[in-house]
Length: 217
Picture 1 (cartoon, rainbow, N blue to C red):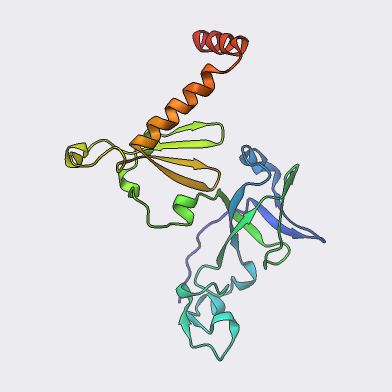
Picture 2 (cartoon, rainbow, N blue to C red):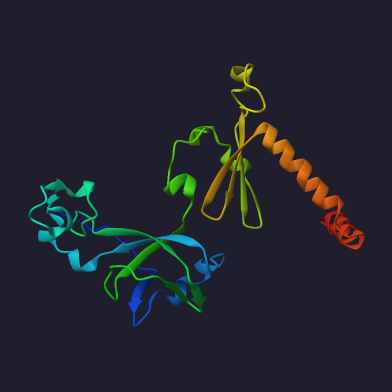
């Protein structure tokens, strides 16, 4: 089996010295901007110890390296032995110090290259049966307010929904960190009304400054 070169650039490495952390290389330090303690992220690692032709040619393994387990295709396992020895971990950032992301222990070797980091999104990474198919979400119209992502539903097929009530029509996906909720049209209106009530109860001085900021931008 031939393996043509496919270039991946490490953005950091797994480090273990009593604690486990991801050490981001200096040239990728700016890519950490926006990450915060408590965030759930996905680590994509390159298991360099398995990066050998004889190991990358293995297509079936005994799960958990136990010969009593029936052979299975590597795509149906989490074995480090696979055509491309990538590993994916969902971890929580316990703290951030400089270019280090401290996480709980993972079963990766010290020095394992990190090839990418992505924020974990429940809607995409922990999929459940959701009322709004991904293709019906208006992703370009999404808004981010603080840590909240608001993703509206496309309105292209509303003519097909004449019999759907506001209590049934799922109108908005609301993401807060890794958590995802879906609001119906009725719940969306209730949320807007609740937010307006909160706004009206803000101190007058704060509302004046908000108006000044809005008018000056």
